[in-house]
Structure formats: C-alpha cells, structure tokens
Length: 231
Image 1 (cartoon, rainbow, N blue to C red):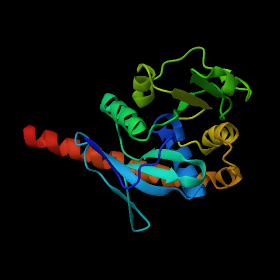
Image 2: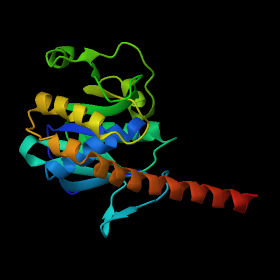
Image 3: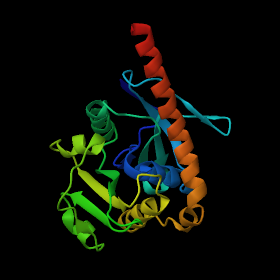
C-alpha cells in the first residue's frame, strides 16, 4: 500500500468519504469535487483491494483519489470502490496522508439510518464540540459506527471529527448529502451552492449508484470466478 501525490499542500483540512449507508459520503465528496473544481493531486494504492477501475464519460475514475481545492486549502479523499474488509488498512492510510500534509483536521462523512422516510438531521462526534454546537448541531448520543470512520474513531492523537446525516433509505440519498454540505459550508466557509444537488438529485444519485454498483458487481463476479477455480 502507498500514497502517491503530485502536490503536497500543508496545513490542510481533509474531508474523507467512503461508500456507506445511502452513499451519503460518496455523493458529498463527488459533489464538492465537481462544484469546487478540485484538482486530482494523487491517489491511494492499496494492493489488497482488487484493481477495479470505473470508466465514466470515457474517463478513468480513480478508485481512491486525492483531490485539492487551493482556494480553501482543502483536500478531499474520494472513494468509489468497495473497501469492505480493508477498513483498518485504509484508516492507517488516511492518518499517513494527514501526517504528510500536516492536516489541521480530518472530517469524516457518514450516512446513518433514520426511522423517517426522508433525510433529516446531521449529528457530529468531535473533540472540538463548541464549533459544531454553535452551528446548531446535536452530538451523536447513541449508535454503532463501522467502516473507516469507526476505525479512525478508535485512533488517538489525531484531529478528527465526524458528521452523520440521517437517511431514511439505503439507496443513494442526495438530500442527506446536501444536509452535510450545508454544515460543511458553514463550518469551513466554502460558499457552496447545494441547490443544484437537490434539483438534480435523481440524476446525481443514478450516476453514483451506477459507478459504485458496477464496481461492486465486478468484484462479486470476480469472487465467484475465484471460488470456481478453487472448487
């Protein structure tokens, strides 16, 4: 495993989002990259993860891309591949990236199940509680956090915060992602217009679902082939 970077900006804020419930994190990072015109400055290569590469509009999409927005000194870690079973490895890579760039803070994005039919509140877990409580957010009191975010929460000595958006469905949820973006906009003063994400929610959801879904389908077929060879 290794991190390859063409540029190494310092004192950055890192936003990371891995595919999870409602694909909230993936939609959030994808929209930020497009809307802020982020530059691809590198990638994370994890040899243990199958080399599945998605192609969209004739462009190869990095499975684990590292993007940079100079105006806000913001690094966005964008994942479009299934990372199940490799969460601990990837959490170490996120920490390594933060050290390489002297990150001020790592902000993790997650979707969490809601009992209502539409996305609603955004919650937080952070050492810097005052900053988020001033935004009117409630701290997450109960829940089970898995994946890369769960692994990072168990690490000591890193400037780490996490935002959780309620989603009433396991399907791609652009509206929950928009709620996250509203918070990030206020917290980081990004001046992001989340309106287009709401207006084009269906198209955006289909795009992300298609890319991630095809990657997962390819991995599933590969696993079946491997089993047939062994059997």
